[in-house]
Image (tube, rainbow, N blue to C red; front, side, top):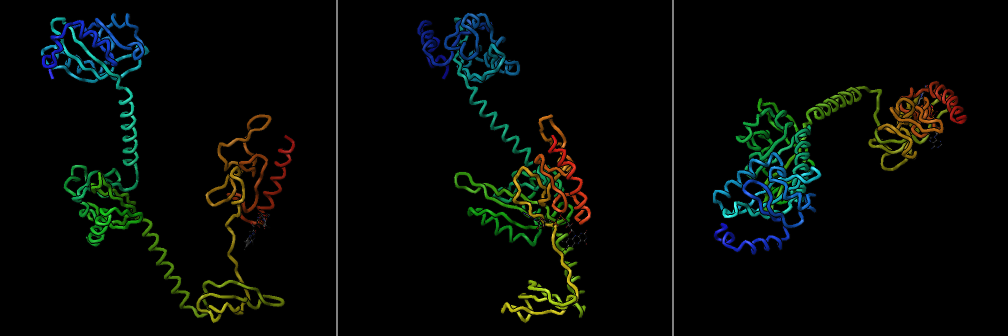
Length: 406
Ligand SMILES: Cc1cc2nc3c(=O)[nH]c(=O)nc-3n(C[C@H](O)[C@H](O)[C@H](O)COP(=O)(O)OP(=O)(O)OC[C@H]3O[C@@H](n4cnc5c(N)ncnc54)[C@H](O)[C@@H]3O)c2cc1C
């Protein structure tokens, strides 16, 4: 509604002024020259300028530079006869901080002035900025992920894909709008994907999806990942998938399977090798030397199922055990590597021990717990030999004495 329609410009000046005073928002009269003539409301609480200071200021003093052009253009249009205008801009508080104000301004030509009501909308902008920041971080994360991330619309086209998607599939951003999911999925998986999307549309989601992708140059590669349907107000709007290229793993698995097959074939061909899986050794038999091994259970043995022991003649027994440290009972202060071996000395990196005499590096073989030492097999990086375990123990004793003396 225009000021005319509102009748504001025909109101007696004292009525308009009183209404401005009553407003819970901030109100003011600003001359066409930009100087404040009146300022009602708690401007001081918001911007820190006292009422007297406000009247010595012009809009240019308050305005944040980046918003000045748009603001003055709005004011100019009101002055030229536009209806009351609402706009937002940032103004400077006395302490230099910026506040967002929502202005409603009308021009009163007879007074050569604008009458304006302003409302502080900074909190809304802060919240919006936080949401934008969080969205930006999320996008950065998706963009920098090594996984292939894609959002697929119900018609099969892509809503968005990440950098890894472009790198692995070889398509450019310009080519994306012309592609659908079925252009990047191997034909053998088309039915599987159609079925999958149907299930996603019905609200299911999948943690372990395996399909084969076809890159632009025609090469195929297996991917594994998860897929979820996205719904807005109950309506299916997109499918989000996160896939990882598992070519290397699949190749390694195939190689391992091939080697295992080869080994099994070679063992099967040798008449002097008899493989018995799943048995346990009950006892070793013999007088002066090993003569037999008493085993129990296992597939393919006469004793299978009955649990009865079976004596196998044997003159030698090789035992492959160890390499699994039993350190899980230790407190978390004693740091271990990913396999449970205890870290000591230089392996602790920059860690220091605090003592009465100040910080010191951990001693050789000293753990992350000051005064606690680890040697031998249980220590990360040790040689796993009797002689070295004994040697490490004798060295550690010297440091134990030093700790006790300190
Ligand atoms: C089958 C096999 C063959 C080997 N052959 C050789 C070889 O020919 N030459 C060679 O140099 N090295 C050989 N080794 C390696 C050698 O045995 C080890 O390097 C050496 O014994 C390490 O000594 P250690 O004192 O660190 O540990 P260990 O000898 O294992 O001593 C650790 C001791 O701590 C005890 N223990 C564990 N947990 C606890 C607990 N919570 N509370 C109390 N006690 C506990 C264990 O029962 C054990 O007695 C062989 C190892 C194996 C498994």
